[in-house]
Image (cartoon, rainbow, N blue to C red):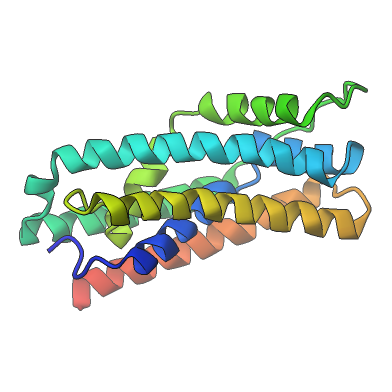
Length: 214
């Protein structure tokens, strides 16, 4: 089976992990949220993160629906084995990409705070313009067995977990930045990305060994 048992709480937790992993890399939207938190305030940074989280949810649902269309093929035991290996490989590539990619340059402050909704929209627009995140969702869904098309209620709870995980990440980040009360330089952000990349690569390797030698 693609997933040994279907439990709403389990899927919600898996979804939260997906949401956090998808949000954590400090790409353009992450740097923008850091900048807005310092320049405009915590809630403006968090509002930008809410827009990014909504975009992540849309891509997650699109990815899940696409995978559910081929679920009969994916559920074959021999296919599950190779799909999980592929998921581990894609996750490792994502971790390596996060590790080696230079941090995005900060935007110049416009001097206008705008409304919370306007800040959320820009976060959504920046994130939705990067469809490559679908490959990350494919890797994560394949690795953890997230898609369960015959259980729509549990699956919906899982997607809610994705949104919740992303929102939790941005809430924790903006809260921490608000406590720091000082600017983070690009070196610190680059170090964070490298640490995250190493963690993702380590998780991918562990998942690969678990699949190969279980």
